[in-house]
Length: 438
Ligand code: MEV
Image 1 (cartoon, rainbow, N blue to C red):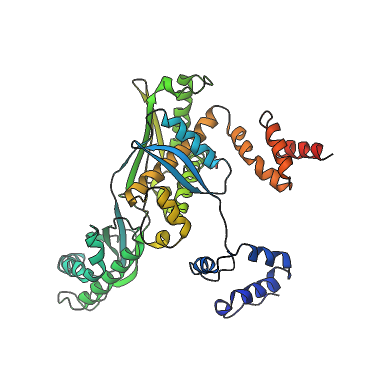
Image 2: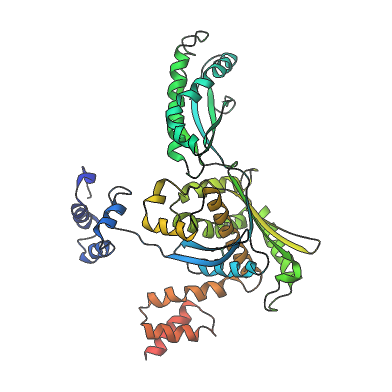
Protein backbone atom coordinates (compact mmCIF):
# COMPACT_ATOMS: atom_id res chain seq x y z
CA UNK A 1 0.00 0.00 0.00
CA UNK A 2 1.27 3.48 -0.83
CA UNK A 3 2.02 5.62 2.21
CA UNK A 4 1.83 9.45 2.25
CA UNK A 5 5.20 11.08 1.62
CA UNK A 6 6.47 13.74 4.02
CA UNK A 7 8.88 16.57 3.24
CA UNK A 8 8.53 15.92 -0.50
CA UNK A 9 9.05 19.53 -1.52
CA UNK A 10 12.42 19.55 0.30
CA UNK A 11 13.81 16.64 -1.73
CA UNK A 12 16.11 17.36 -4.67
CA UNK A 13 14.74 16.88 -8.18
CA UNK A 14 16.62 13.56 -8.52
CA UNK A 15 15.30 12.38 -5.15
CA UNK A 16 11.77 13.30 -6.18
CA UNK A 17 12.14 11.31 -9.41
CA UNK A 18 13.58 8.35 -7.50
CA UNK A 19 10.63 8.41 -5.06
CA UNK A 20 8.11 8.72 -7.90
CA UNK A 21 9.77 5.95 -9.84
CA UNK A 22 9.80 3.56 -6.89
CA UNK A 23 6.25 4.46 -5.79
CA UNK A 24 4.31 4.85 -9.02
CA UNK A 25 6.43 4.00 -12.07
CA UNK A 26 7.45 0.45 -11.11
CA UNK A 27 11.09 1.58 -11.27
CA UNK A 28 10.69 2.02 -15.03
CA UNK A 29 13.97 3.45 -16.37
CA UNK A 30 12.11 4.45 -19.53
CA UNK A 31 9.72 6.78 -17.71
CA UNK A 32 12.60 8.29 -15.77
CA UNK A 33 14.53 8.79 -19.02
CA UNK A 34 11.56 10.55 -20.58
CA UNK A 35 11.32 12.93 -17.64
CA UNK A 36 15.02 13.75 -18.07
CA UNK A 37 14.81 13.92 -21.86
CA UNK A 38 12.63 17.01 -21.54
CA UNK A 39 15.16 18.91 -19.44
CA UNK A 40 16.72 21.80 -21.27
CA UNK A 41 20.46 21.46 -21.91
CA UNK A 42 20.81 25.11 -20.92
CA UNK A 43 20.81 24.69 -17.14
CA UNK A 44 19.92 28.33 -16.50
CA UNK A 45 16.85 28.04 -18.71
CA UNK A 46 15.95 24.76 -17.04
CA UNK A 47 16.24 26.33 -13.60
CA UNK A 48 14.08 29.28 -14.69
CA UNK A 49 11.31 26.89 -15.71
CA UNK A 50 11.65 24.85 -12.55
CA UNK A 51 11.27 27.96 -10.47
CA UNK A 52 7.98 28.97 -12.10
CA UNK A 53 6.26 26.44 -9.86
CA UNK A 54 6.90 23.78 -7.22
CA UNK A 55 7.97 20.13 -7.33
CA UNK A 56 9.01 20.49 -10.97
CA UNK A 57 10.40 17.28 -12.44
CA UNK A 58 10.49 18.13 -16.10
CA UNK A 59 9.02 20.44 -18.75
CA UNK A 60 5.80 19.88 -20.65
CA UNK A 61 6.08 21.04 -24.24
CA UNK A 62 3.31 22.38 -26.45
CA UNK A 63 3.90 23.30 -30.08
CA UNK A 64 4.50 27.04 -30.56
CA UNK A 65 3.27 28.01 -34.02
CA UNK A 66 2.36 31.06 -36.05
CA UNK A 67 -0.77 32.01 -37.96
CA UNK A 68 0.33 34.76 -40.37
CA UNK A 69 -1.55 37.34 -42.47
CA UNK A 70 -4.01 38.61 -39.90
CA UNK A 71 -5.13 42.09 -40.92
CA UNK A 72 -6.36 43.75 -37.73
CA UNK A 73 -7.53 47.37 -37.89
CA UNK A 74 -5.47 47.78 -41.07
CA UNK A 75 -2.23 46.35 -39.63
CA UNK A 76 -0.77 42.94 -40.51
CA UNK A 77 0.03 40.53 -37.70
CA UNK A 78 1.49 37.06 -37.40
CA UNK A 79 -0.20 35.55 -34.36
CA UNK A 80 1.78 33.17 -32.14
CA UNK A 81 -0.23 30.22 -30.84
CA UNK A 82 0.67 27.53 -28.32
CA UNK A 83 -1.61 24.58 -29.01
CA UNK A 84 -1.47 20.83 -29.44
CA UNK A 85 -4.66 20.35 -31.49
CA UNK A 86 -3.92 19.67 -35.14
CA UNK A 87 -5.84 21.94 -37.53
CA UNK A 88 -6.26 24.94 -35.18
CA UNK A 89 -3.36 26.95 -36.62
CA UNK A 90 -4.18 25.90 -40.18
CA UNK A 91 -7.81 26.97 -39.64
CA UNK A 92 -6.74 30.32 -38.18
CA UNK A 93 -4.37 30.93 -41.09
CA UNK A 94 -7.09 30.09 -43.60
CA UNK A 95 -9.57 32.45 -41.94
CA UNK A 96 -6.90 35.18 -41.82
CA UNK A 97 -6.25 34.77 -45.54
CA UNK A 98 -9.97 34.75 -46.33
CA UNK A 99 -10.73 37.95 -44.39
CA UNK A 100 -7.47 39.58 -45.49
CA UNK A 101 -8.97 39.99 -48.95
CA UNK A 102 -12.32 41.17 -47.56
CA UNK A 103 -11.38 44.17 -45.43
CA UNK A 104 -9.68 42.38 -42.54
CA UNK A 105 -10.74 42.24 -38.90
CA UNK A 106 -12.08 45.34 -37.14
CA UNK A 107 -11.60 45.36 -33.39
CA UNK A 108 -12.35 47.72 -30.56
CA UNK A 109 -11.68 47.60 -26.84
CA UNK A 110 -14.92 48.75 -25.20
CA UNK A 111 -13.58 49.11 -21.66
CA UNK A 112 -10.86 47.79 -19.36
CA UNK A 113 -12.28 47.82 -15.83
CA UNK A 114 -11.40 44.94 -13.52
CA UNK A 115 -13.14 43.92 -10.32
CA UNK A 116 -12.21 42.67 -6.88
CA UNK A 117 -14.31 42.14 -3.77
CA UNK A 118 -13.98 42.03 -0.01
CA UNK A 119 -16.66 39.61 1.13
CA UNK A 120 -17.75 40.13 4.73
CA UNK A 121 -20.52 39.43 7.23
CA UNK A 122 -22.04 42.34 9.12
CA UNK A 123 -24.58 41.58 11.82
CA UNK A 124 -26.33 44.81 12.57
CA UNK A 125 -28.04 47.94 11.35
CA UNK A 126 -27.59 48.40 7.58
CA UNK A 127 -28.18 52.17 7.77
CA UNK A 128 -25.30 52.49 10.25
CA UNK A 129 -23.10 50.39 7.98
CA UNK A 130 -23.83 52.73 5.10
CA UNK A 131 -22.91 55.79 7.17
CA UNK A 132 -19.73 54.04 8.30
CA UNK A 133 -18.87 53.14 4.70
CA UNK A 134 -19.23 56.76 3.55
CA UNK A 135 -16.76 57.78 6.27
CA UNK A 136 -14.27 54.97 5.73
CA UNK A 137 -14.19 55.11 1.91
CA UNK A 138 -11.62 57.97 1.69
CA UNK A 139 -9.52 56.13 4.31
CA UNK A 140 -9.59 52.99 2.19
CA UNK A 141 -8.44 54.91 -0.87
CA UNK A 142 -5.69 56.70 1.04
CA UNK A 143 -4.65 53.52 2.81
CA UNK A 144 -3.55 51.83 -0.43
CA UNK A 145 -1.47 54.80 -1.64
CA UNK A 146 1.74 52.81 -1.11
CA UNK A 147 0.41 50.00 -3.31
CA UNK A 148 -1.17 52.17 -6.01
CA UNK A 149 1.65 54.73 -6.48
CA UNK A 150 3.37 52.93 -9.38
CA UNK A 151 0.11 51.88 -10.98
CA UNK A 152 -1.15 55.49 -10.84
CA UNK A 153 2.03 56.66 -12.59
CA UNK A 154 1.03 54.34 -15.45
CA UNK A 155 -2.51 55.77 -15.47
CA UNK A 156 -4.17 53.01 -13.46
CA UNK A 157 -5.33 52.57 -9.88
CA UNK A 158 -8.50 52.10 -7.86
CA UNK A 159 -11.51 53.46 -9.75
CA UNK A 160 -14.24 53.05 -7.16
CA UNK A 161 -15.41 51.15 -4.10
CA UNK A 162 -19.07 50.37 -3.53
CA UNK A 163 -20.80 48.82 -0.54
CA UNK A 164 -23.17 46.08 -1.68
CA UNK A 165 -25.84 44.48 0.46
CA UNK A 166 -26.14 40.78 -0.37
CA UNK A 167 -28.14 39.74 2.68
CA UNK A 168 -30.95 38.40 0.49
CA UNK A 169 -28.50 35.74 -0.75
CA UNK A 170 -26.56 34.81 2.40
CA UNK A 171 -27.46 36.03 5.91
CA UNK A 172 -25.43 39.15 6.90
CA UNK A 173 -23.42 39.00 3.62
CA UNK A 174 -22.06 42.30 2.29
CA UNK A 175 -19.32 43.25 -0.14
CA UNK A 176 -16.89 45.98 -0.87
CA UNK A 177 -17.21 45.78 -4.64
CA UNK A 178 -14.09 47.47 -6.01
CA UNK A 179 -13.19 48.53 -9.53
CA UNK A 180 -9.64 48.84 -10.85
CA UNK A 181 -7.74 49.97 -13.92
CA UNK A 182 -4.52 47.97 -14.24
CA UNK A 183 -3.27 49.29 -17.62
CA UNK A 184 -0.86 46.80 -19.25
CA UNK A 185 -0.70 44.34 -16.38
CA UNK A 186 -3.30 41.66 -15.74
CA UNK A 187 -3.21 43.14 -12.25
CA UNK A 188 -4.04 40.11 -10.10
CA UNK A 189 -1.37 40.79 -7.46
CA UNK A 190 -2.09 44.51 -7.49
CA UNK A 191 -5.83 44.00 -7.02
CA UNK A 192 -5.44 41.34 -4.33
CA UNK A 193 -2.94 43.46 -2.38
CA UNK A 194 -5.32 46.45 -2.49
CA UNK A 195 -8.25 44.28 -1.37
CA UNK A 196 -6.41 42.79 1.58
CA UNK A 197 -5.37 46.27 2.67
CA UNK A 198 -9.00 47.49 2.28
CA UNK A 199 -10.13 44.64 4.52
CA UNK A 200 -7.60 45.52 7.24
CA UNK A 201 -8.50 49.21 7.23
CA UNK A 202 -12.22 48.43 7.14
CA UNK A 203 -11.98 46.12 10.14
CA UNK A 204 -9.88 48.41 12.29
CA UNK A 205 -11.98 51.49 11.42
CA UNK A 206 -15.15 49.57 12.34
CA UNK A 207 -13.71 48.84 15.77
CA UNK A 208 -13.36 52.57 16.41
CA UNK A 209 -16.72 53.65 14.91
CA UNK A 210 -18.69 55.05 17.80
CA UNK A 211 -22.19 54.48 16.41
CA UNK A 212 -21.61 50.74 16.12
CA UNK A 213 -22.59 48.43 18.98
CA UNK A 214 -20.15 45.73 20.12
CA UNK A 215 -21.25 43.20 17.46
CA UNK A 216 -21.31 45.79 14.66
CA UNK A 217 -17.75 46.82 15.53
CA UNK A 218 -16.54 43.38 14.37
CA UNK A 219 -17.57 42.69 10.79
CA UNK A 220 -16.21 39.30 9.80
CA UNK A 221 -14.11 39.40 6.65
CA UNK A 222 -14.58 36.08 4.86
CA UNK A 223 -12.19 36.71 1.97
CA UNK A 224 -10.66 39.38 -0.23
CA UNK A 225 -10.07 38.38 -3.84
CA UNK A 226 -10.26 39.65 -7.41
CA UNK A 227 -13.06 38.44 -9.64
CA UNK A 228 -12.28 36.69 -12.90
CA UNK A 229 -15.73 37.76 -14.09
CA UNK A 230 -14.85 40.94 -15.95
CA UNK A 231 -17.92 42.01 -17.96
CA UNK A 232 -16.56 45.56 -17.97
CA UNK A 233 -13.24 44.55 -19.54
CA UNK A 234 -14.62 43.97 -22.99
CA UNK A 235 -13.39 43.73 -26.54
CA UNK A 236 -15.42 43.49 -29.75
CA UNK A 237 -14.14 41.92 -32.98
CA UNK A 238 -15.96 41.94 -36.29
CA UNK A 239 -15.67 40.97 -39.93
CA UNK A 240 -18.03 41.93 -42.73
CA UNK A 241 -18.31 41.81 -46.50
CA UNK A 242 -20.96 41.79 -49.23
CA UNK A 243 -22.67 38.39 -49.28
CA UNK A 244 -21.50 37.69 -52.85
CA UNK A 245 -17.87 37.99 -51.66
CA UNK A 246 -18.37 35.02 -49.33
CA UNK A 247 -17.94 32.76 -52.31
CA UNK A 248 -14.53 31.16 -52.34
CA UNK A 249 -13.27 29.47 -55.53
CA UNK A 250 -16.88 28.97 -56.68
CA UNK A 251 -17.06 26.13 -54.20
CA UNK A 252 -20.43 27.16 -52.74
CA UNK A 253 -23.34 29.48 -53.34
CA UNK A 254 -22.68 32.57 -51.17
CA UNK A 255 -26.35 33.23 -50.37
CA UNK A 256 -27.14 29.76 -49.13
CA UNK A 257 -23.77 29.67 -47.36
CA UNK A 258 -24.62 32.91 -45.50
CA UNK A 259 -28.05 31.56 -44.59
CA UNK A 260 -26.68 28.25 -43.33
CA UNK A 261 -23.89 30.03 -41.44
CA UNK A 262 -26.34 32.37 -39.70
CA UNK A 263 -28.60 29.45 -38.81
CA UNK A 264 -25.61 27.61 -37.32
CA UNK A 265 -24.85 30.66 -35.16
CA UNK A 266 -28.53 31.00 -34.25
CA UNK A 267 -28.57 27.36 -33.07
CA UNK A 268 -25.58 28.09 -30.82
CA UNK A 269 -27.44 31.16 -29.50
CA UNK A 270 -30.38 29.06 -28.29
CA UNK A 271 -29.12 25.51 -27.75
CA UNK A 272 -26.60 25.04 -24.91
CA UNK A 273 -25.36 21.64 -26.16
CA UNK A 274 -24.26 23.29 -29.38
CA UNK A 275 -23.23 26.58 -27.70
CA UNK A 276 -20.61 24.84 -25.57
CA UNK A 277 -18.93 23.22 -28.59
CA UNK A 278 -19.29 26.39 -30.64
CA UNK A 279 -17.58 28.40 -27.89
CA UNK A 280 -14.99 25.66 -27.39
CA UNK A 281 -13.94 26.28 -30.99
CA UNK A 282 -13.60 29.98 -30.19
CA UNK A 283 -11.46 29.08 -27.16
CA UNK A 284 -9.17 27.04 -29.46
CA UNK A 285 -7.98 30.36 -30.86
CA UNK A 286 -8.19 32.37 -27.65
CA UNK A 287 -6.38 29.93 -25.35
CA UNK A 288 -3.60 29.36 -27.86
CA UNK A 289 -2.71 33.07 -27.92
CA UNK A 290 -3.32 33.52 -24.20
CA UNK A 291 -0.87 30.68 -23.51
CA UNK A 292 1.74 31.83 -26.03
CA UNK A 293 1.71 35.30 -24.46
CA UNK A 294 2.13 33.95 -20.92
CA UNK A 295 -1.34 34.87 -19.71
CA UNK A 296 -3.62 32.98 -17.35
CA UNK A 297 -5.85 30.84 -19.56
CA UNK A 298 -7.87 29.53 -16.59
CA UNK A 299 -8.86 33.08 -15.67
CA UNK A 300 -9.73 33.89 -19.28
CA UNK A 301 -11.74 30.67 -19.71
CA UNK A 302 -13.69 31.18 -16.47
CA UNK A 303 -14.48 34.80 -17.31
CA UNK A 304 -15.55 34.12 -20.87
CA UNK A 305 -17.81 31.18 -20.01
CA UNK A 306 -19.44 33.20 -17.22
CA UNK A 307 -20.04 35.96 -19.75
CA UNK A 308 -21.55 33.45 -22.17
CA UNK A 309 -24.15 32.63 -19.50
CA UNK A 310 -24.75 36.14 -18.20
CA UNK A 311 -28.46 35.98 -19.17
CA UNK A 312 -28.98 32.78 -17.20
CA UNK A 313 -28.45 30.46 -20.17
CA UNK A 314 -25.17 29.45 -21.77
CA UNK A 315 -25.08 30.97 -25.28
CA UNK A 316 -22.92 31.52 -28.33
CA UNK A 317 -20.32 34.26 -27.93
CA UNK A 318 -20.50 35.08 -31.64
CA UNK A 319 -23.36 36.49 -33.67
CA UNK A 320 -24.01 36.84 -37.39
CA UNK A 321 -26.39 38.75 -39.63
CA UNK A 322 -27.09 39.77 -43.20
CA UNK A 323 -28.49 43.25 -43.71
CA UNK A 324 -28.73 45.10 -47.03
CA UNK A 325 -26.59 42.43 -48.68
CA UNK A 326 -23.80 42.73 -46.11
CA UNK A 327 -22.75 39.69 -44.10
CA UNK A 328 -21.54 40.57 -40.63
CA UNK A 329 -19.98 38.25 -38.04
CA UNK A 330 -18.94 39.51 -34.61
CA UNK A 331 -18.11 38.68 -31.04
CA UNK A 332 -17.87 40.56 -27.78
CA UNK A 333 -15.86 38.94 -24.99
CA UNK A 334 -14.36 39.90 -21.64
CA UNK A 335 -10.58 39.49 -21.48
CA UNK A 336 -8.31 40.34 -18.56
CA UNK A 337 -4.78 39.94 -19.92
CA UNK A 338 -1.43 41.62 -19.44
CA UNK A 339 1.67 42.42 -21.44
CA UNK A 340 3.82 43.37 -18.46
CA UNK A 341 4.40 41.50 -15.20
CA UNK A 342 3.77 37.83 -14.53
CA UNK A 343 5.45 35.48 -17.00
CA UNK A 344 5.59 38.16 -19.70
CA UNK A 345 9.07 39.34 -18.87
CA UNK A 346 10.33 36.03 -17.49
CA UNK A 347 9.51 33.31 -20.00
CA UNK A 348 11.84 33.59 -23.01
CA UNK A 349 9.29 32.23 -25.51
CA UNK A 350 6.61 34.56 -24.17
CA UNK A 351 8.97 37.47 -24.76
CA UNK A 352 9.44 36.27 -28.35
CA UNK A 353 5.65 35.96 -28.78
CA UNK A 354 5.15 39.55 -27.60
CA UNK A 355 7.94 40.71 -29.89
CA UNK A 356 6.27 38.96 -32.85
CA UNK A 357 3.11 40.88 -31.92
CA UNK A 358 5.14 44.12 -31.96
CA UNK A 359 5.09 44.54 -28.17
CA UNK A 360 1.38 45.20 -27.79
CA UNK A 361 -0.26 47.05 -24.92
CA UNK A 362 -2.78 44.99 -22.95
CA UNK A 363 -5.73 46.49 -24.91
CA UNK A 364 -3.95 45.67 -28.19
CA UNK A 365 -3.40 42.12 -26.98
CA UNK A 366 -7.12 41.92 -26.10
CA UNK A 367 -7.86 42.86 -29.71
CA UNK A 368 -5.49 40.26 -31.16
CA UNK A 369 -6.83 37.50 -28.92
CA UNK A 370 -10.44 38.33 -29.79
CA UNK A 371 -9.57 38.17 -33.49
CA UNK A 372 -7.95 34.75 -33.04
CA UNK A 373 -11.18 33.53 -31.40
CA UNK A 374 -13.47 34.99 -34.07
CA UNK A 375 -11.28 33.62 -36.88
CA UNK A 376 -11.31 30.17 -35.34
CA UNK A 377 -15.10 30.18 -35.05
CA UNK A 378 -15.48 31.38 -38.64
CA UNK A 379 -13.20 28.61 -39.88
CA UNK A 380 -15.02 25.94 -37.86
CA UNK A 381 -18.50 27.07 -38.95
CA UNK A 382 -17.45 27.39 -42.57
CA UNK A 383 -16.26 23.79 -42.57
CA UNK A 384 -19.25 22.57 -40.57
CA UNK A 385 -21.85 24.04 -42.93
CA UNK A 386 -20.00 23.09 -46.12
CA UNK A 387 -17.67 20.09 -46.25
CA UNK A 388 -18.12 18.92 -42.64
CA UNK A 389 -15.35 19.21 -40.07
CA UNK A 390 -13.64 15.86 -40.54
CA UNK A 391 -12.23 16.46 -44.00
CA UNK A 392 -9.90 19.26 -42.90
CA UNK A 393 -9.47 17.93 -39.39
CA UNK A 394 -8.37 14.45 -40.44
CA UNK A 395 -5.96 15.90 -43.02
CA UNK A 396 -4.27 17.77 -40.20
CA UNK A 397 -4.49 14.74 -37.92
CA UNK A 398 -2.74 12.55 -40.50
CA UNK A 399 0.70 13.36 -39.08
CA UNK A 400 -0.40 12.24 -35.59
CA UNK A 401 -1.60 8.89 -36.99
CA UNK A 402 1.66 8.45 -38.93
CA UNK A 403 3.67 9.22 -35.80
CA UNK A 404 1.59 6.77 -33.74
CA UNK A 405 2.52 4.13 -36.35
CA UNK A 406 6.21 5.14 -36.20
CA UNK A 407 6.24 6.02 -39.90
CA UNK A 408 9.65 6.91 -41.35
CA UNK A 409 10.27 10.22 -43.16
CA UNK A 410 9.96 8.41 -46.51
CA UNK A 411 6.70 6.70 -45.52
CA UNK A 412 5.28 10.03 -44.32
CA UNK A 413 6.09 11.70 -47.63
CA UNK A 414 4.45 8.89 -49.64
CA UNK A 415 1.31 8.84 -47.53
CA UNK A 416 0.91 12.61 -47.30
CA UNK A 417 0.91 12.62 -51.10
CA UNK A 418 -1.51 9.70 -51.24
CA UNK A 419 -3.96 11.32 -48.82
CA UNK A 420 -4.03 14.55 -50.79
CA UNK A 421 -6.50 12.68 -52.98
CA UNK A 422 -8.08 10.25 -50.50
CA UNK A 423 -10.18 10.61 -47.37
CA UNK A 424 -8.11 10.30 -44.20
CA UNK A 425 -9.38 7.74 -41.71
CA UNK A 426 -7.37 6.02 -39.00
CA UNK A 427 -7.87 2.57 -40.51
CA UNK A 428 -7.22 3.89 -44.04
CA UNK A 429 -3.85 5.28 -42.98
CA UNK A 430 -2.83 2.09 -41.17
CA UNK A 431 -3.88 0.02 -44.19
CA UNK A 432 -1.90 2.15 -46.67
CA UNK A 433 1.13 2.07 -44.39
CA UNK A 434 0.96 -1.71 -44.19
CA UNK A 435 0.72 -1.94 -47.97
CA UNK A 436 3.74 0.33 -48.31
CA UNK A 437 5.72 -1.76 -45.87
CA UNK A 438 5.03 -5.05 -47.64
C1 MEV B 1 -12.91 21.31 -32.30
O1 MEV B 1 -11.77 21.54 -31.49
C2 MEV B 1 -13.75 22.56 -32.36
C3 MEV B 1 -15.06 22.42 -33.12
O2 MEV B 1 -15.83 21.34 -32.58
C4 MEV B 1 -15.80 23.73 -32.93
C5 MEV B 1 -17.22 23.74 -33.46
O3 MEV B 1 -17.85 22.69 -33.53
O4 MEV B 1 -17.67 24.85 -33.78
C6 MEV B 1 -14.82 22.12 -34.56
